[in-house]
Amino acid sequence: MSDLPEGLIEFVRRAGWGGAAVEAIPGDASFRRYFRLRRGDGAAAMLMYAPPPEEDPQPFLLVAQWLSGNGMRAPEILAQNPREGWLLIEDFGEDRMRDWLDAHPEDELAAYESAIDALVELHRLPPGPFSPYDIDTYLREALLFTQWYVPAIALKVDETGFEAAWREVLVPLAARQSPGVTVLRDYHAENIMLLDGSPHSPQGLIDFQDALVGHPAYDLVSLLQDARRDVPVELEAVMLARYTASIGADHEFGGDYARLGAQRNAKIVGIFTRLHRRDGKPRYLSLIPRVWAAMERDLAHPALEPVARWFDANIPENLRRSGGGTIV
Image 1 (tube, one colour):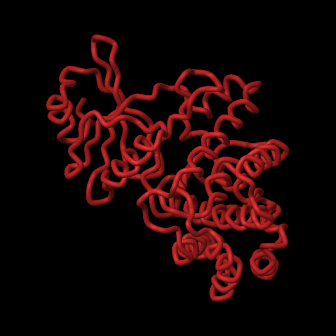
Image 2 (cartoon, one colour; image 1 turned 90 degrees about the horizontal axis):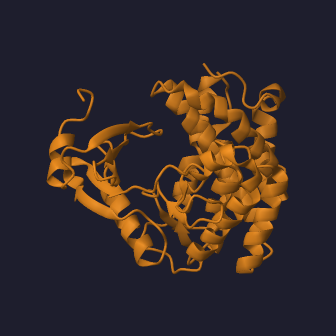
């Protein structure tokens, strides 16, 4: 127990879970830490530690309350001390969509259908009380590619042209996304819990604290161009068609999906490089070729022509063929 954060035992005791067994859960790319609590009576709960100043649990609380209040399945908040970074929340169990499909690949179609249907349900709601996913945010994220990936492979590129190309591509999209939908921003197979232990289960949502109001295609990209799991391109097409048929998407939607796919994937390449070079987490580098392959497919769409032209002029073909090359 010596490696537990200071204050954990006292918070757990005050929450009525004193004496519960504490099991550390492998973390993600942030400073947050998670623990599963198990009591002798068989009850379980999840403990989130979001230590200030690096983390703030208040956004998680805000989004969780909004989701639950609108019929979506976010974890119930059992106890909280956000000033010190502690939240005790409902335990959704261990049936993550990603893990379920690793063990039951035959359920892939059903699981993705359920995930798409949950997004349709979310997007039919009025947007939540969250900040806008505006053009400045889109550009700031895309620029992570030139800020982190480009120096890591010692390239000299046209950084001004990179931003200009993205602005040309994204400004029309940003104008189309009003009034927008709630965008969870990390809606993928590792953040979807199957609450009844089947591919048709209700979708338990986690890791949504960065929610914004933006374009409905963004979370589709997050799900169907998953950085951590291979989603067959045929399945991606079928699920995209399922979504667009459900909401009656207009003729611009396919182009906007490609725009946000390329934007998100460029951002992720930058973030994974930063996790390695700044934070000492090299395990994310192995995911970049998958992300890069999805980005190349997005760049082939006519809507991405200015950005594709920049890649043609600035990123050598051998690096593109090898999924981004070797990052040191």
